Image (cartoon, rainbow, N blue to C red; front, top):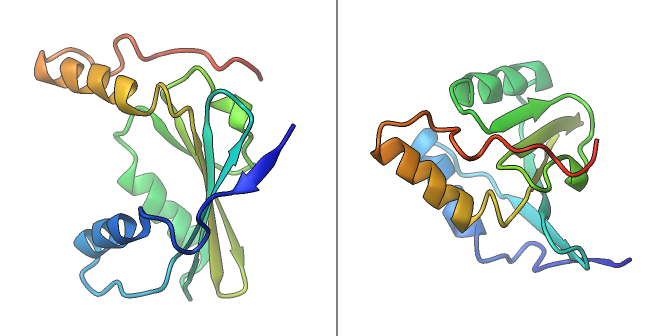
Length: 143
């Protein structure tokens, strides 16, 4: 029954996020406000990212959907997300909102399955030419 912000604006993953964005778009140099949340729940990570952009939400959504089109586990969703939608799955849910010139990106994962253990199974599937979803198509614990 508790929730707190973890290393807002100064999280250790911000440089990694910016590096990945720079690889995708060489001219990227915007500030990123990354705010992860932690709570007394056994599984899951919920995070928000805010970045300034003049690009319209429908264009941003199109770019996200195009980028993740072949990804079996990342889903761009229109409605706001809930952590219980991903618990016990290998899914990453992303919800995008635009507020003036600020883009709000909300994400949630089950850090046990989408974390190292799920990544190991996913990598093994790829290494052995198996369907990438083998052993990872799991139902959420709620909804």
